[in-house]
Image (cartoon, rainbow, N blue to C red):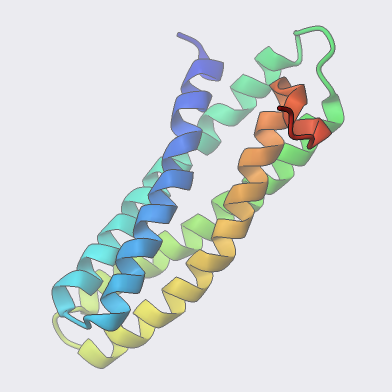
Length: 151
């Protein structure tokens, strides 16, 4: 198993994990229990760890894929850019989750506000997740690049 294999395995975790975190976060906005908000923060933190794994294996995967014939360098660079932006966004969300977990025992009103800010940030990151995943798929899947539906 090489870094390209690892990158393909790890890249799906932050994208799917972010979707799960958003669903829990939305649920916690309606049922404002402290436990649900803390669960949301933990899931965002875990998604951040997954993002680190995906990002750390990206350069190695890029070097491997560049050796294949017919690989478009521009697609790789585009994917790297969106991947970096997605990574930074998830690091911010995960980073905000840490003080949220720490202060969850003392400042419940602060916790509810943080929960609202996180859902806004996560929804914005979901757009970057879709773009990052799509640009990654275009590198080896020309059917994505064409954007055509076939019967």
